[in-house]
Length: 308
Length: 329
Image 1 (cartoon, helix red, strand yellow):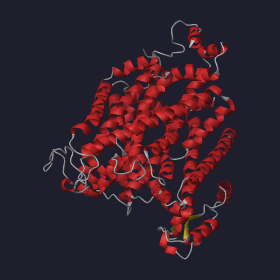
Image 2 (cartoon, chains in turn orange, green):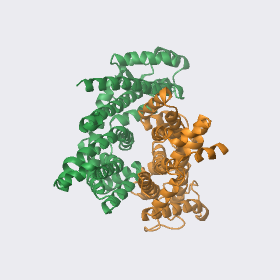
Image 3 (cartoon, helix red, strand yellow):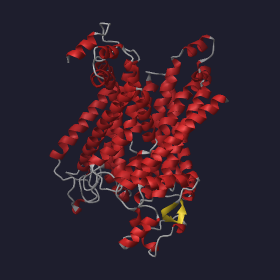
Image 4 (cartoon, helix red, strand yellow):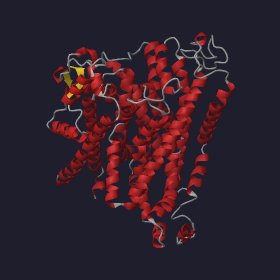
């Protein structure tokens, strides 16, 4: 603790600008919040989050219980719909709104966990490679080349297609497939950061390499990268849906968008809502994440290019 | 020319190493994860002794490194082997069809299977990219030219919207609207060019957000450069500057994007879209091969896919230096 405070005190300029450790995050967030789109997207996201938490408590139905008498009920806004099935029921009489909400919760949990995983793994490798340089750097970056040359889908079905897939193995595959991007980006920034005064200062007063990487470089370069990771949460949720569709995602009866959509395709002509309606909910959730991510990315670029 | 020669020599040797490593990863992965192809080749009723005998005859019980060495030796001579599952006519011939025993000669060659499927995939990919460019170019350029104004917002909305549509869902929606309801286009399988259109639309929706963003960023960045102002000062019109110079210089980051990101995305999208539409391309071939543990097919596609990625990246880097002479200095 003492070392790190002394370390940042060694920076000659009184303003935190050269090392720009704090401040940047707050400025990016403030800039992003200035966009109306950001507020709208955040509102939508919070609304959906509340719905996923409260919905299962309020709706008097089960996401997995089969009820043949209620099958193929259309949504309320169509003729023949009835409560409590606001968005209708599927081919087995299960409530679609409820299944979508549980599916959304599962997809988000998998998306968020896998992005945290790939962020930590990728950035750890990237910072290490950038800070160390030399053959370690070359080796690790060639490794990212190899990893990036394997299509995600091949990797996923090879691993998930043979065993009974579960959330942990799905997350592991997503992390394995996507860490190189984070490694590349963080390595590039770490390489530049290594030359900076505050890092040299820390080294002079005897801070260990590990300490410099974890306590000094990581906090100053990671927040800008983290903002863009919001976009990846949405991407991973789409992958989760694709896996479910192919049959290598979370297994039935647990509701996920992939299985809901793939099962519903058989009844497309007579009961289109089984596939279409849950997809709208998923697209809304992804839309809120992507819009937030897009605005955060713009705000970040603006601030990093010297905007106030 | 000496530059080009040295460039390709260095990058080619790096590329070969990467492709071999990718092949090794996939090769090992296939043999480490559970799921024995022999059981699928011979069917569930085969006695264990026959299973073992066939597995040994195929070399599947040798150490993985020995198997890999043998495989790479064959690949080096241009032989990609024969499918475990697919018969000479291309259909699946697993299980009960030849209980008497397995003979590799009765199976289709992997090279032949790929050669049959590849044109379909190229057609789909080409049309998908064309559709995506058709959408992304006008929006992207407009957004880049008017940064911070409404076309820019439109670009943000359009890319956020398209990227939020899961391809599996878009596919089902389009099948429902264009095929089932309106009866405008056919959707599942392949019996003619029309079968490519809906899958290509799905692919385009997946590709366009990245394109829109990249095009607008590249165009906007060039408007801030000194050469742009210099051109205007010398009396060139905005239109000329954009058409003649900005687009040319914006091509460099765009080409980079196409290499690094787009080909990977395209490949992934192709796999999923072909699977949804039962479109008879490489993706469909590979996905069914993985489910059937058809090792030779998967390995060959992995080599091919990583080879294409590496080659495209190499060409893109080369083209970048050719378009923008500054990069050479």
